[in-house]
Image 1: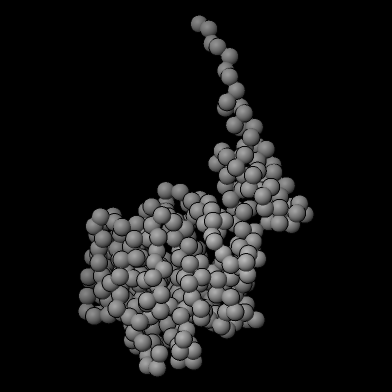
Image 2 (image 1 turned 90 degrees about the vertical axis):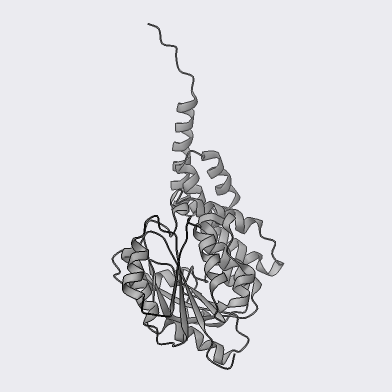
Length: 324
């Protein structure tokens, strides 16, 4: 791309009018001039619709749609991608927001790398009230392999997706590639992760910028009502998804890295939700996730499994008959 392309910022929202203002204002304040902002509203009431009409009706950059009936997270995002007209797409969830120069920092990479397909940067971590924790932000990015030595064009884009370097939002990517990969409804609460992995697997030119471009707000609920039903579904789906991927041999090490991250979460959740045998099976299948028995987490999880087994035994034990 030789000229500054139009960037479509896609903003799915659901029942969070108290947060979307900060997100939307951060989009409108971007120093990059060529943007459009598409909002897909899955809210159960009309509070967000009224807010958008009252506060932003004058701004032609905003294109708002109320989804009736609600579409759910994946279909909502997919509908935004379909409506967008830019050459580059960005996704930002309603509880997160952008650094002032976030879009400009990523879009500038296309001037340096005309064949670039995907770009992403670092995320600040903020609490529910929006306070930035610099130390936790650095730890968050380091945990997902976003470090200075990793900056630049990624030698293995597929690895970038598998080890979760690629963030859940705040990225920039070619519209055609994003539409081709798409958001999958069957991925449920895991659709962000599945999309990120598949996008990186499909791309040949992915760039990581070691600069902050967005704010990630840590909250206990997800963006759509469908994901609130089970906050644990994402880890299970992600684990099964990674296991089932058909990968080139060069990406098997990245698969193992991904499974090492996910397996202990899956073990803990199985044990806490009355599936001790499933928990034990995953723990024994992934000994590398517990440093081959050298991790204290392994013994803690064994204790959880034992407690869950005992609870199942007690519930299934025949009860003595009661006589009048």
